[in-house]
Image (tube, rainbow, N blue to C red):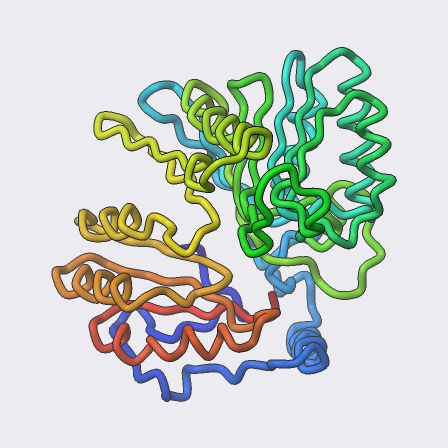
Length: 358
């Protein structure tokens, strides 16, 4: 973990577990007004940018971002290059990759905004399609329910192949109506040897000023992404193809699921599907097999008791388990849900960090 910034609050530090009710546990603003007040308070406490006290978000190129430095890429055994990205720089890398496309662009995304960032992506996809490149866009119906349809019409007119995942409006459904099955994947494929995935949707609240200069007064979402270049990127191609076939051919939702576990390789793919029976067992298998460390970060931490038990058992057998969870959330009840597990996790030696302000 990088050097802890002022807004990365440890619930359990490296020296050992602490009580969930100790003074180390921060208070959490639960309303939108409290969220903005917390950010204002943070700005007052850490006003000097020259000391590296940014809000902890990679808002724009050149942002000091609490001393964040882009890590060097790593190379897998098959030659695939893996690069980690923080916040908007992930969308910037995706934008640049699309510009270099020569044969194929595939995007699967939950939210595609019609704000300046979304328009920039839409214009780029339309331009690449007009160049003769095959461009496929799979977007979630509910996630894009507030997006102006003119944005998609413009791309369609340029030849972009569009697909809407599980339409919210029943009369738009080609197959059965499944309003609660949503596609939260964020996936990019370029020419089948470049891929990207992570938590970033296409919109200004994710990009900051990395694509176009942002006029937003509230900070963008804090998210991670990784980029792949090389043979391992092809595994994500199969994941996209399965989702695309499901949207066009129907059937059980699980046909869009894809799991690739290569015991001899450095990388495996778990592409779950939006059902009440998501493949939790595959995640539990990874936790149970861990021998040295488990690093887990997610926006919404409300796992079943079985996964909590597995994390506890891992810590008890000597595996270093560290969780990075949000201290501020757009669904406040999930903060309460996450903290309901803290006592048991901390008592077992699990380290828990709550990130503030983003």
